[in-house]
Image: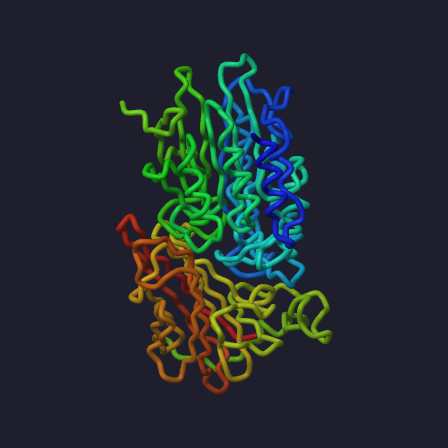
Length: 313
Length: 191
């Protein structure tokens, strides 16, 4: 079945798209090695961080990149007990003009701050990793092509986790075989027919927990991949959708979604900067906790079942 | 209200503009000395009033102030002011993070004897002030989430003005319904 799908994709591809996604060919099992790394890994428990948008307020404003906030957040995550096995980030790591030279130095500042956290970090793509506009579309088949921001994102953030495209999947499984989890990273600003087909395949793989990570929330309909990916997500089991874009924190249970966009970008609500920790509980539910980055105060906390439904007390 | 002052700012002389960042003209490409925080730097390039603070001096030279809340910490939602000037004009950039942009959202800017209101539609209430807005979000559509709006102002400077009291205030009501305000004030001098 998978081979048939791949053949169909290859036959139907437009001339602007070079090849079908490699992940459509490979086994979707978790890498058989302990710890989080390229492709995922085997873990004793599922405990990870979610960190949001991190960019300056103004275009090309590298001197005022929010390095201090990002540094504090990654230090906080590093200090969490137990320490999260990995982190996912929800996109927007820069605010750089596509014709300029500030993308690389802004990512260097980000990576400098991120170095305070020792474990793997898997980066979703934001609109600022294309042109900056929410409706922009980069990559093969995209109207905006391969911008400098896009290329820097791929080379500095994506390549280190062993991926080559802005959409990818990471597989984790319990060391004792009691659960499996897949993290499906959707690039709503590098959307094309192949990503759509890949997403449908990737989500079809059975797993105990399924997390989708996409920069734009459900309401950001101008992003090319939001509505199409929302429709695909609706056809498959989903534990939680992790998004950013809005520089705040929010829990939208109707979409099984948390918005984590308060990673250093200018805050546009009453919430302070912070991050989220999602931790597996002994009964198989997941506890979701949003923290303030300075006080470690709990901003919000709730628990969900593997199917994404809310655990009611 | 304090008036525009023509008092000489001798203290500023040692930090006169030598450079304005790497994107500016060759004449100004030497390392820029740090100015005191209450000095409005002179811009070395022409500023287009279009709502986009894209000219390099906005990032590399401008007086930059982050508004604070009643607790003295960075205001939420985030608000930021930047200033530059040339011989005849004070340029003001106002950044407003905002998850629900409304026409009624506004800044109040006090510059010496002048009080200027400018709203998220890009309208200033002074006929001699040029204003432009760049919005990332929708105006008056509470059903979605917005990101930010930026105001760029060009305000005529009185001849010979060298210093003045400046203040800025912005209040906003995010989707949680709580109105929060950010404020800033300082005595500023023109480089």
